[in-house]
Length: 184
Image (cartoon, rainbow, N blue to C red; front, side):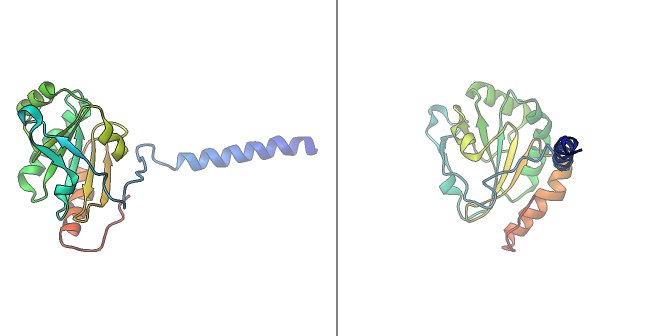
């Protein structure tokens, strides 16, 4: 009789572990950065010939801003781009780009064709800044508060629904100086 209890116990433990795993949304990737300072970076700006202008995280302190990680080779970026162009045209919150593992000519041509929603877009050719942010893939979008703390991370394309339900309310709260949000 006891020889059947051990396999039964192992089976029940596996069922419990599987059940717990099925409750998690596989699209939700935790970010160790939410609630912590955004990584420091200084990147050449995409549309500056010769890289004479630099985008620095330190220069953005004191204001709420968004960082969108994108690339010309990214299919999902093409899907979200019209949403970002519309958002940037209407929002007082500046949107900055992080051009991830791309070539400058391809990225510049893509922005000319699709429209440029970014105040500036830093060039992260080797992906080191993306690694510092914990980027799993593109697109990803971050909201950083006036103190330089990451308050939100969107993995995958920003959709109109995500923009209305999550991003805009958080931006309004952060701009009004309200309590710090603890988004999902």
